[in-house]
Image (cartoon, rainbow, N blue to C red; front, side):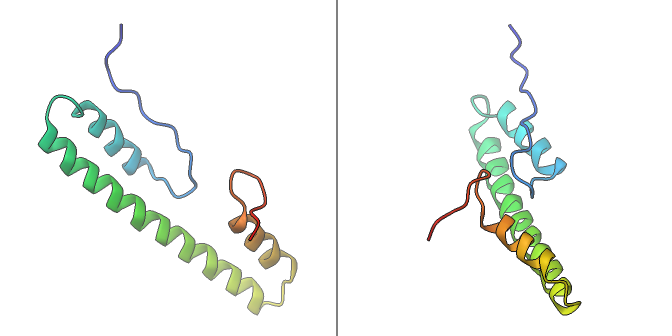
Length: 92
């Protein structure tokens, strides 16, 4: 039986390798060291929030740049991809 924590897979576009490494380290401390686990959990959540905000900001900036270049198709396509969740169109 292998008790070593496996590296989680990247499920979101904004997840970085650093975050995944921290998640692996956090899993190792889950039942052994509660203080270390809580510290790592706080760090992971903060980095995820920061990475998500940066990713959305970058995507929006890219859409605005294509809009300024009068490229009509790309901003529409990108905006729709931001509205989708799990490949399905989200309804209002």
